[in-house]
Image (cartoon, rainbow, N blue to C red; front, side, top):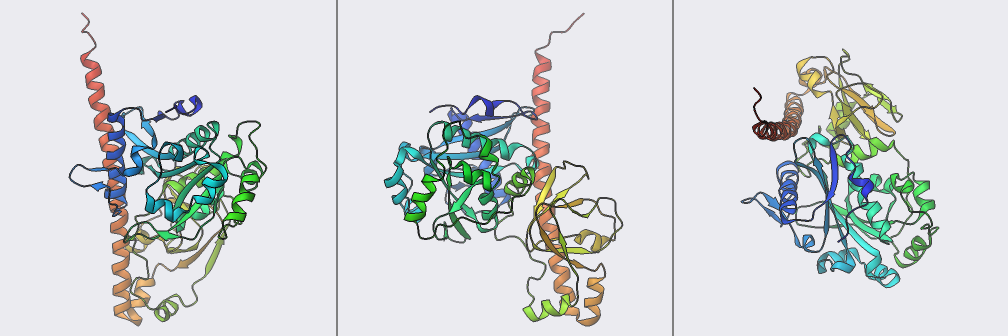
Length: 412
């Protein structure tokens, strides 16, 4: 197995992208996956081993694993897996769902890969880790002649993968019981015109002379009735990586209007104003006294703790999420800056919403208050995971420092 291109291994903010080559490295990755999949995202995957706190599946036998290592603490902070079909076939059930037959017939197994298990540590999201992992994998695949890379994406992430250059080619399906729909996507890695059109971050990485001018896409378009070239509204590259890295726990998110009928929702909202935000617009800024909540109707909002030209997003909110609930419940100032990552529509809910509801219908006010408390609890849980991650890295770094001190001879 060849190592990734050397360019992807240069330290960036003390993070290096490496390819696992030993059992010990692979075990670190499996345990990191457990922390993200089982403890944070609470996925019900068959490969999750709670007793050993690791996640591994059949694809790991033939896949190669890229991972990001924080050079300060030495810990794994991100990973992605790619399976080149020539190294081993995918499990029959997955291969059948992906319907790879026409691709294999047209291009051969040695030109096709399947990417999966892409994740980033909560405390490193919104930085460079996601981009380094994805671009390192693309660069390595393109250099070795991988024409097509297949993946499956959650519904909420499909339009983000579209900007990377992936296109939908087959109907969505569920990968496991209790999981949501997943959309099969394929990247024509050598399609320079398409990468340019959607402003894919990969467009600058295609080796010279590899452009196929859309030939591969044309052959797939004829073979797959579900194929379509999506309309893509590009978002700023850093915001794209942040949105991809910030996955919400599937099936655990409480909506503001859980338990409300459509008629009740219409009655509660009444004449609530809607605001349209352009990419980069600030909805709120940290320290402002502005009260009220915002309910995201469409688009995405990045949450940053500083208001700078290049903020680090600690989380990303999509359609159905709210922000500002803390100020409504506590009456405090804004603690974060909210940045629209793309064209975004929000409903502005008044700060006295609960008081108004209580006067009209105590039951509705109770349900709304309960939902707000659950949302706060979920966000507190997510914050705790980030704090634990930071604590672990600080502890490991401290231990490493003490070991280094032991090796320093005393001077008289």
